[in-house]
Structure formats: C-alpha cells, structure tokens
Length: 186
Image (cartoon, rainbow, N blue to C red):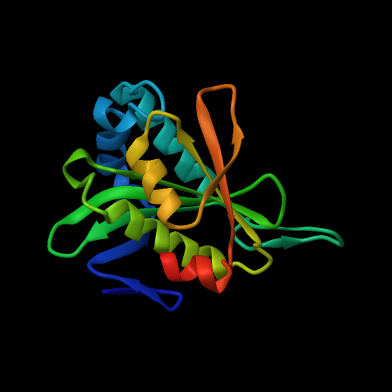
C-alpha cells in the first residue's frame, strides 16, 4: 500500500519521473494500443526526444510554487506508476489547469494493466495529491470521446463533461471536494 498525502490504494505507488523511467516512457508512447486514445504512436526517436525535453523541463529550478498577488501557479508533476510485485506499469501527471485553481489529471497504463480498475485507483491517488497542492478547487481531465473505459472511470469519480473540444476530446471537470452525497457514490 502507498500513502500519498494520506490516501492509499492497494499495491500502487507513485515515484517522481527520473531518467530511469525512459524505457517505460518509450514503451507507452510508442505503443499504438496505449496511444489510440491520445494521438498517433511516436517513433522511438520522437519518444526519446519528448522524454529528454520533459526531463530538462522538470529539472529546471522552478520546482516550488510561485505566488503573485492574484494567482498561485505550481509546476507540473510527472510520476512513474509502480505496481507492487510487478514494477513500472504506467505514467501519471498533474498539470496546471486553465487557471491557478485548476489541476488537470492524466494517466497512461501499459496494455497488460488496462481494464482492471487500476486507472480509477490511480486517479484517486492523483485527486489526493491535487488536494495537497493548496488553492486547487477544480480538477479536470481530457478524454477522447471514444475512450468509454476512461469516461466510465471519470464518471465514477464525479467528473462531468464540461466541454466538447474540437479535437475529438471531451473536457471533464469536478470540484476537488465533492459534496457528501457525490462522495458516497465513489
């Protein structure tokens, strides 16, 4: 069990993305079955370049939240998803949203670990992590309209469609803290 800021999910752990995650990153972004709901699968060269750019961005010194008179912004967080007894099975991310009080959740799992409820567990961990950022009021996700499993998972967690995007994706949103009636359905 992992406790991420007071929330635990059986067998899942999150580790900060580091250079050792490159094989996992390449396996996810080059796999058509993973990318079918995101965009075209990348070549090894494209995926490696994206990974290196991401690592450079994450290693920049802006690792602390920045506060101005009107907003608080925070850096994106990328995680390797580990399953006890197995190892790395996916990636997860928390990204700053459209405004300082919004966080966008994202997740990817290797094909062997899809359709087992792990994505929903992973989203619960990300929701708990977002709750510890301070100032976050709204959570969002972008999900391709045909990704019925991800849409079902998001609905179980209280996300509702807030916009239909031109690229075939839906934006789903929910308050960080659900009212007690909604919370009991999770």
